[in-house]
Length: 87
Image 1 (tube, rainbow, N blue to C red):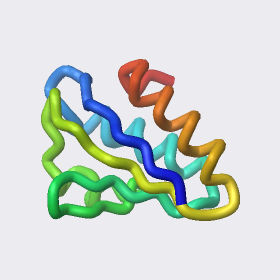
Image 2: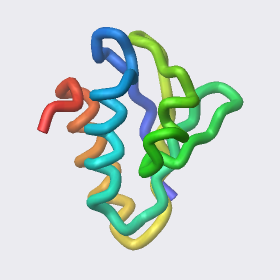
Image 3: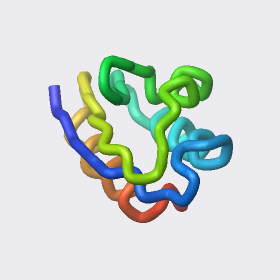
């Protein structure tokens, strides 16, 4: 398992468009990807699951990657988030 901690810097936090972009990116990988915010754990490939975490701008969240391509997914998803969730 690989874990990455990132600060969400997207203006307005993870609302509809950024969550959609995040989930679409996460779906490109085989491994299980979880988003952890406090006591909430979401499947990063599930739009409603991520949206339910109510991640705001400035929140620190952890992503957990577990599976075949976890290393690649961790590096690429971290970069994707740090560049503002832009494809």
